Image (cartoon, rainbow, N blue to C red; front, side, top):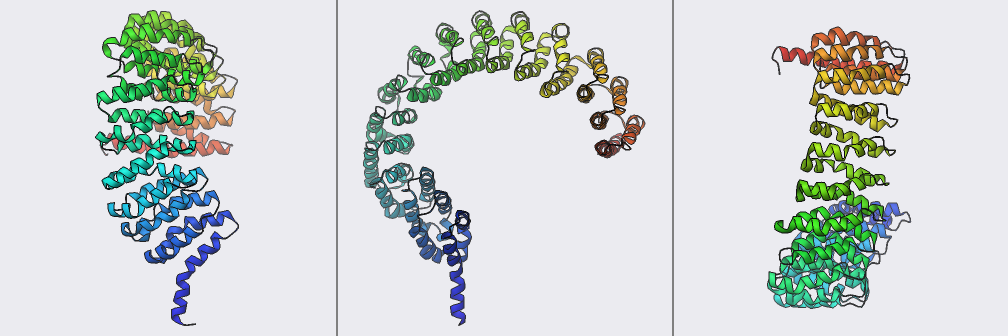
Length: 603
C-alpha cells in the first residue's frame, strides 16, 4: 500500500470510529462519541469538519434524546472548529433539524445554541443564512419548529435591514395567533424579550396587538405568560401609553378566572407594583392586592402573603401607615386563622416586618395580637417563622414591652415538642440577653439555657454550648464562673456519657471567652477529671478539648498543665484515644512555638 493511501486511511480513521460508535447499540458509547466531537473536529481540521463531519451529523440525527441533547449543546461551541464566523452558517442546518424534534429539552438546547452562534454571524450572513432558516422554522408544518422559532427573533431583529424587520414582526404576530396552544405559549413567553430589542417608538405599533390577543387567550397556560410580557412592556412605554395600554391588561389579569394566572400575578406582584405604582392610585392597587390575599385558592393566597412586607415597603411613604393599618392588617387578621397551613407559615415569616413601617404604638395595638396568635399556632413551621422575626419587634417596641407581652409565650416554646422550634429559641437567646439585660436574663431565661444542655436532641445541646460563649462574652467570665461552671460540674458527674461529652463541648466554647486564670481555676480541673473517664469516647473528646483550650493558654502553662495529660492519653489502651492525643500533641507543639515566637517578637 502506498504512503498516500496510508495517509488517507489515517485521516479517515476519526470519522470511521465516530460512525462505528454512533451506530453502536450501547447508548453510553454513542454519548461518549458525541462528547468527543470537538476532539474529532480538531483532528480533522476546519475544512473536513465543515465538509464531512457536519454533513454526517446532519444526515444522522435520529438518535436517543439524551444523545441529541449533548449534540445540540456541542454544536453551540463549534464556531472556531468550523473556521470561525465566516463559516459558522454551516452549523445552522444540523441545529435547525434539532430544533424540530419532539423532545422539548433537545429543542430548547438547540435554540440556545442557535442564539449563541447568531452573535457570531455578520449582519450580511444573518440575512443570507440565519433569516431563511428562521423563516423555515416559523412556517414549518409541525408545531415543534414554530415553537423553536419564537426564541430566535430577539437575537436577529436588531441587526437586520428595515425590510426584514417588517417581515419578522409579521411572522411573530402570526405565531402569536397560531392555531396550536404550544406555539402561542412559546410566543407569549418570548414576547417581552422581543419587545425589549424593538425601537421604543415601534413597540406599540409592532407588538401591542399581540399582547392584547394573548392576554385573553382561551388557554390559561398562555395567559399566565403574558404577565411577564406586560411588565416588560410597562418598562418600555412612556407614562401615557403605559396608563392606556398596559395598566388595563394587568388589572384584568389580577381578576383572571384561572387561579394559575392569578398565582403568576401574585408571584410578579412587586414587579407590577414597580411598573404601575407611580402612575396608579395606591388604593386601587391595594384593593387588587387584598383580593389576591383573599383568593379562594390557597396557592394564590400563599404567594400573595409572601410579598406582604415588600409590597408595604413600596407603598407611597405619605400613605403607607394608614394603608397598612386600615387595609392590609385587616386582611392579615383573617389570614391568621386561614385553613391552609402554608399561608399561615408565610404570614408568620413576613408580618412582623411591618413593625418598623407603622411605629411602636400601632405595633403594640395591631401587630402584637397577631403575633401572639401565630406564636401559639398548632403548626410548628408557623411558630418557627414567627420566632425568627422576633428581633424586628424588639427593635420597635423595646425590651420592656417585649418581656411583658411575649416572654411567657417564648418560655413555653422553649420546651416545644418540635426540636426545630426549640432550636430557633436557643439561637435567639444571645440577642434577647443583650436586649433584656443580665438581671432579667438570669432570673427568667438562664434556667432554660442550662436545661437545653441536657436536651435529648444533639442539635439543641450543641447550639446551647455555642450560645454559652456568646453569653459569657456579654456578661463576663465571672458570670460564667457563677452561673455556668456549677452546671458543668454536675454534667461532669452525670451517669450518661453523652452529658459528660456535652460538658466538654461547652468548656471548649467557654475557654474562648474566659481569661487564662479562669480557665486554670474553673475549666482545667473538670477536663483533668474527664481524662480519667471510663468511656473512650469521653477520653478522646477530652484530648480534643485540651487541643482547643490550649489555644488560650501560655507556653509555660501548656508545658506544665496540658503536656502531662496528653502524654497519659497517648498511652491509653484505646486506639482512637491515642490517635486524638497524638493529634492534640502535634497541635500543642505548634502552639508552644507560636507562643514563644510571639514573646520574642518573631512574626
